[in-house]
Image (cartoon, rainbow, N blue to C red):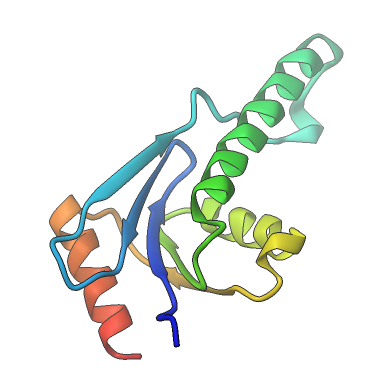
Length: 127
């Protein structure tokens, strides 16, 4: 029986740090967003609308890049200090490629790379 691949993703609106859970030394792959705009429909005037669309496209590309990098994993842990992890969670759940994938959300603060690795190791070791 093949072992289920597990990955932890610490993320915010601008950066995602992907860490595969394994017995060896963990390595981090980073995916960054060029720019992410806050979506505030009530405060956007007509002249700003094209800029918002560009920001939405950038955000979609950011989440798409993360999804493409993790599509072979059976368990995905999303953690970090912002709502970006929740947005990615909903996008992954809506994607047919992730129907059999267990995706978990955990609130976490800003962390160093070592703290992120320790968090992923501890989380998956408990399972």
